Image (cartoon, rainbow, N blue to C red; front, side):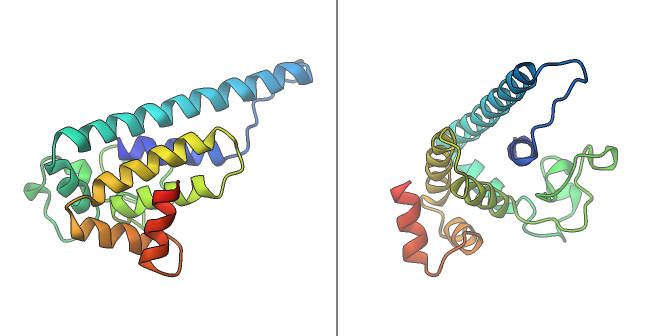
Length: 171
């Protein structure tokens, strides 16, 4: 789910370039709008699924904290080997099918904070929906989990913990 969120966010930020040589400008614009709508739907569904998991199973908050937090965790100690690390710039190549093997893995909470920050920087009107959903998800992940709160707030841009928390609340 986390990989889907990160990949979809990156796809949404990439230049929309469906082109067909014989297509009219209107057709190309329609294709871009359809692609943007499909990516927004995918992102919202993935965020909704993760939010529901966090709401109904408290242990998910702890599991998400550990995803990518410690590189020294052995595969045997994890419920699934694919949970070792996550790189926000991973392109999902064949070598990363089961486990991200990219050079710069970061904790899952940092990835989610990064997606939220990218959403905050967006001028797209529809992104306000995603921003609000991300703020709720991050708030739920921090609820009764001081180490999650520390990890998320450290990953968010800003000057102080208080201002970062206020920004999440205001969203």
